[in-house]
Image 1 (cartoon, one colour):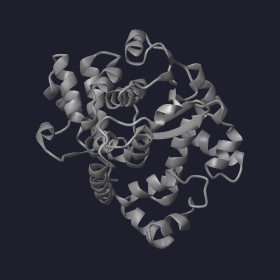
Image 2 (tube, rainbow, N blue to C red; image 1 turned 90 degrees about the vertical axis):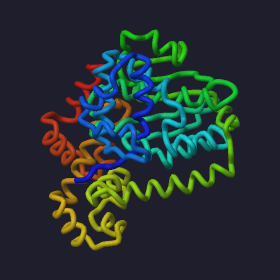
Image 3 (tube, rainbow, N blue to C red; image 1 turned 120 degrees about the vertical axis):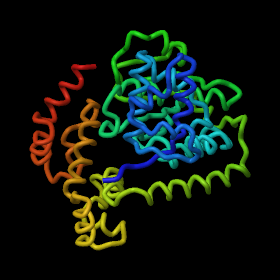
Length: 339
């Protein structure tokens, strides 16, 4: 099954960090088993697993647990390729976030974002797909938060007025690095990963706003996204669609087949050619979502079973025990005990 692709734009940011820390970029790419010439190729693409291997290799070579924060500080908007240009040329923070939500798959298809306004607060939440990111998860959460805050601070006249920066992982030893990046508003062991800031800043203009150029970049970004999607296997596209429609009227075999303009029989036949099936793909998507949501104690297990599309909770229990070897409740206790 072909993997989702992303531009190799992250490599220059890692190179900058490597140079600052007197590290050998060639060693990082060799350790990641990635073509060394990629760093010199314009318009090069990486698979998501290659991107993960590069990040993991850089983390290990640098041997600094604060790697995610340091890389996030090093990333500038132009490190994010077309997505960065879209964000930088937006009119205000709200539009920049809207573009992030729509085009984030150009850079980070393994991260889901959402924005909620709660009174005077704007709450930007993000969650990482642990089926794609399997190592150094706290570092990845650090990386996302540090990147968002660093880029926002660079693009607005007044820095982002942070109220809380919440992480689901436990408090690490390198607390002073968090305070340097975010100030004293950091909390750990939370139910979700959130950046909370003044809601009034959503309408704050960006210093780099350029509406006319923005429209052109948006067209290029949409074309790039279509190009990336066209390179993917059918099974990757089906998995992506299923994961975003679990528990809805669009999660059946017939509905998924209709979305891809084919009959259920044709979809099954084409998936078989890729050595998988609709049931296997749906099972994997349910498994990943279950692992993610069980880590949040506020989510009811019966409600989660319904969300995943199981006809009753007992079927969910049987499926989860097949996946993990323990019940959903036991798994939740294990996860919460490790925080």
